[in-house]
Length: 283
Image (cartoon, rainbow, N blue to C red; front, side, top):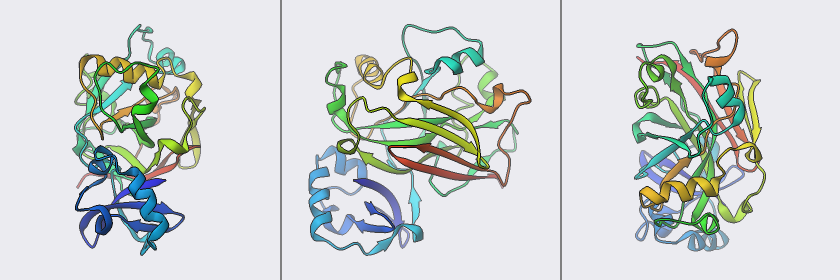
């Protein structure tokens, strides 16, 4: 299934996408699960699939205003420096453990919405990534068990304000400017993507390929990330792990390339879909 969060006549809702048709799940399952995170936490993905077989879609995807896939995650944990080419282009060294940082919900926008360049900087960079949505929580999850803890996958653009990121050894400010990160368009449920299935990630800026890599090129695999993170903090349903970006970021190109108003950035994962965002200045 492809599951989305969206606004229906200004009211937050969630549903299943099939082509351009959308089944609004709120009237069907909303009493038990008011949002997508709750649907996952209540283990109702099966009920959602059953609802899709007995209910007719009433909405059109192309006419909806989307929301970030999980609108209210308790945690957004991002993995840095997780592809060899990106490690090399940044001049950093490989680390035995994943490098982690956090994003906040307010730093995100949905598919089809504009990423916002703040007036404080013109160094707005793209980072195409694969997002993992946790389905079953846990502490000290083993790598062998990690696949059963995944609800699904989405596309992510870890938009970064590079000069603010580089101003200190801590990346929080540069990674959390308001509305700089894209998350969407939907979550593809884990039953559609086999454990350890090879996925190809591509970032395009105005149609030009800027990044491309496969999950086989990750330094720390998705199971390794889940095992490592759940060692120090319990993972919960709806938590999001953003799994790292490959080489080719604009900040490390010669000459450098940064996103500007009017640009369109696309993050495509072959097993998931395409996250598309325009760029505008903050007003």
